[in-house]
Amino acid sequence: MSNLDRQAALTVCGGRGFVVAEPVRELLSPRHVRLGESTEVRRLLPNLGRRMVGAWAFVDHYGPDDIADEPGMQVPPHPHMGLQTVSWLHDGEVLHRDSTGSLQTIRPRELGLMTSGRAISHSEESPRPHARFLHGAQLWVALPDAHRHVEPHFQHHADLPRIAGGGLTATVVLGELDGARSPGTTYTPIVGADLALAPGTDARLPLDPDFEYAVLAMSGEVHVDGVPVLPGSMLYLGCGRTELPLRADSAAGLMLLGGEPFEEEIVMWWNFVGRTDEEIRRAREEWATGDRFGEVKGYDGDRLDAPPVPAAHLKARGRVR
Image 1 (cartoon, rainbow, N blue to C red):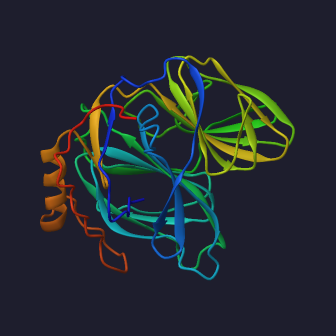
Image 2 (image 1 turned 180 degrees about the vertical axis):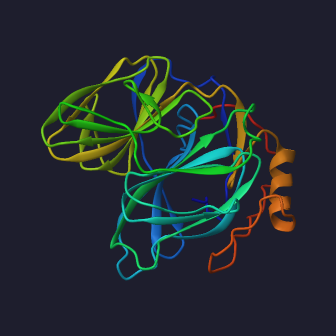
C-alpha cells in the first residue's frame, strides 16, 4: 500500500538512542488518513511518539469497511525502495500487481510479501466483484543497508505455521515465534504474528527479551499486560520481556510486531526508505522521469505522481520522538 498523503512528511528514524530497554506500556493513538474514495486507514507508525518497532517502520490498520456498493481499495501504481511491504487481511481480498510481473490475489490470513530492494512499483485493488467487507493491515519493514539494494521480488504464502494453546492461536506471519517460523524471507531479526483469542482466554505468550515489541489491536477488546487495547490502537511494550500476558473476555484479534531494535539511521519519505537527502530526491526524480521502478501492467488507471519533496534538507537523525 502506498502512503497517499499529498503532504508527505519527512520521517527520520532508526538507531538505538530512543529504544526502551525495559518493559513499558505506551499506548499509541492513530492518525486517520484517506486512501482513495472509500478506504480510510488508521496510521499507527510512524507515530508522534514512536517511529519504529524493530525494523517495522510503517503500520496502517483499515476496516472492517462495508464495500458492497463501493470500489473498495484502489491504490494506483506507485514506487517503493529500501523496504518490504507486508499485506495482511482478516476480511476481503486484495489484488496485487507489480513491475516484476507478479499478479496475485491475497486472501485472509495469507502473506503477501513484496521486497522492493533497489526499486519496484506496484498497485493494489479490490477485485471485481469483491467481498462485502474489507479489513486488514498494511505494514512496512525497513531493509538494512547490506540488503536494501537486492533484486525486487514478491512472495505469496497461503499456508503459514500456527501455534495454539489456552484459547490463543498465533499465526506466524514473519520471522519466528515460539519455535514456529514463517516461510517469508527476512533480512533482520524480526517477528510478526496474528493472534486470535477465544472468549475467556487468559494466556501468556513467550517472547525474546532482546526484541522490542508492540501489539496492534485488530478486533475486540484485549487486555495486554493489564492494559485494555481497543481496535485501531497500538500498545508499545519496550524490550526485556520473556512473556506477554493476554486476556480477552470475548473473541478478539491482535497483531504482534517485534524485532531487534533497528540500529541504522534512515530517512523515510513518501514510499521510499533511504539514507540521505540526495538518495530520496534522486528516487523521486527517477519515478517522475525514468524507468528505474519499472511498469505495472494491467492496472486500469494512471499511476501516482509523487508529492513535492520538502524544501528542508532531509537528514537521518535516529529515533526522533
